[in-house]
Each structure stands twice: as C-alpha cells, then as structure tokens.
Length: 114
Length: 112
Image (cartoon, rainbow over all chains, first blue to last red; front, side, top):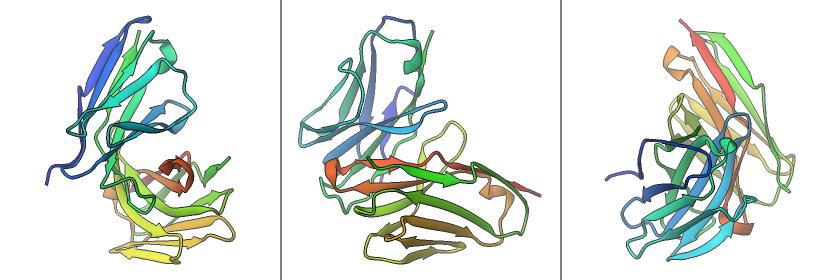
C-alpha cells in the first residue's frame, strides 16, 4: 500500500511569490493534515481538512491556505512568501476524522525562500 | 495551551547502551501520545502509539510508557545500535481540533 506522497520534494521561491505544495493521502484516508517544521521552531500544526472542509487551523496568518479535493488529495498555498516561511512542510493523513486514529506522515516538501 | 517538552535535547551513547528519552506535557486531557523517529531532512516514522487508557506499548527493542496523570512519557530503546541515530519526537493528540502537538525532539547519536 502506497504511503502519503508529497510534491515537489524541493521548492525554491523568492520573497513575495506564491508557493503551492501538494499531498496525496493513503488510499481510503479522508483526513489530511499539514504541519510546518521551521528551523528552531519545531513541528507546528497548520491545517486539518476532512471531507473537503477545513476543520481546524493553527496559529498561522491567512496567507497560509489550502483545500482538499474530491479525491481527498490536498494543496497548501502560501502567498506573499517571507524568508521565515522557509521550512519543511509535512503532510499527514488518517482514515477518518477520529481523535483515536494515528496520523501517517509523508516525506515532506522543503521550501526555501530567498 | 498544551506544551510538550523533551529532555535531553541531545544524547550521545556508545553502541549497546540502553537509551532513555523523556517527554512531558502540561495538559493531561489527551487522546493518545505517539513517538516518532525523524532522520535528517526526512519525514516522520511512527514508532509507538499509546492510547490515553494504556500504560505502555512495546515493539521489538522499543518500549514506551505513559503516565497521564503526571504528564510524562518515556521511550526506552534497548541495546542501541548506530542505526538508531536520529531525532526522536513525541507528540500528544488533543481532543480539540484533532491535532498533534510536538515536543522539540531529542537528537540521538549512537557511536560504534
């Protein structure tokens, strides 16, 4: 069974540009989560989508947004990029929107903002 | 607000020694606690998941305990090997918002 996949592996942008990151969950999983791992800040929760709806959002500005498609894949968009947005962005999926389910993580997208 | 702390931040041991990694959290209202491994620049690999009603979980050389009332978990790795070198992260699942709150991690180096 294929795991969570993310694309691209690496992304280089300049300040002010927009970045789009993609995630495909494990087959059969309906919930997708996004986390940011910035140097010195640790892993922080960004967004949770389930059945196409945003269910929860972390303490991030509105220029971080996303969506979930009918096939449960997801996209994270970061507008007006700033230098401090440079980080590893991890996507995770779970079978359903249950607090008891574990989250399975993808390999991440490394975003570098110059 | 939930806060998760991992001590020590880094650990270096000779091969064969047992590893003890600590994790503490401030709010005991959790669904579960999970231990992950992360290799440099990579994603997370789940090691052990302990539900809030459980006291411990074991998988091979790994054993994790959970004391919810005191807000503590410990990951034991027996007979460490150089391949165990990685960063180990603990995370708690909170009821509100179905999100994971992570500790800062413990970076482990096992010397041959």
